[in-house]
Image (cartoon, rainbow, N blue to C red):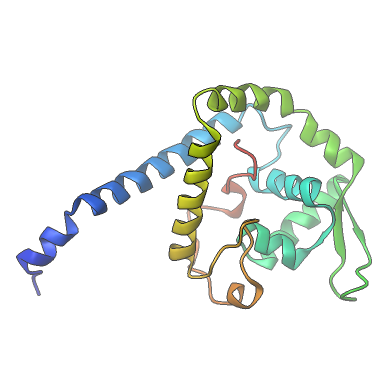
Amino acid sequence: MMASPEANADNASPARERLEELLAEINALAALLKWRAGPIQSGDVPPATRAVLQILQRRGQMAVPALARARGTSRQNIQTIINRLEQEGWVGLAGNPAHKRSDLVFITESGAAMLESGAAREAEIVDAVLATTSPAELAAACQLIRRLRDVLGGAPVTDDGSRREAEARQPKPPKHEAEPADQELPVSLL
């Protein structure tokens, strides 16, 4: 069945074209950030692994399900990352008084030191970006991207980037098979 001329006209609207341009720019920026992050990574630390450490450093100890919500990924994915981080000595586990079967994960001193090793190189790149943007532009961009995630992800995203607990249990869209979990962007710019 062929679409009507009116439907094709709607598909070519200026708003649709701007949205497609925005999504293409986001995709290009993500690829560029992954490329620029390569030399900044300490050792052979995948971006998703680094991102989990950054969350723990910023927010303090958290249970695996809370980390999964903060990353917008599955509990199983985060558990795999935590297992690797624990083997490296970059995170530790502590009992969770609120939930006996879900330990609290915390960043260790060696984990924090590993993150610090790339901080100076990352700061140069961040400073270059900050020199060209205002706080208002950054806030507006964050708000728009958060709203896009909200619409595309099917669950409202809170101000801290986590999804509301009840809505987070909704099925997530499948990840593309060519995109392993370790290719996700870290929390920081790079």
